[in-house]
Length: 75
Image (cartoon, rainbow, N blue to C red; front, top):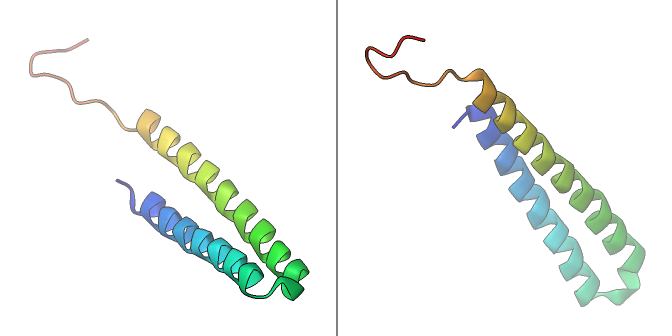
């Protein structure tokens, strides 16, 4: 796997954890509704967009990587 996709995937996991922390903050303190909602929506959207970027990057890398040819297989 490409190091860039590994890095982006790690960042998306951190963003997902932050979104869960926002929900936890809301459950613990419903008075902080707007803060928790903004954390979850902002971080959740960022994680979703990052996952789309990872899929796009992986697709480009798959297309750009030449396939292995069998010995004697010259097209």
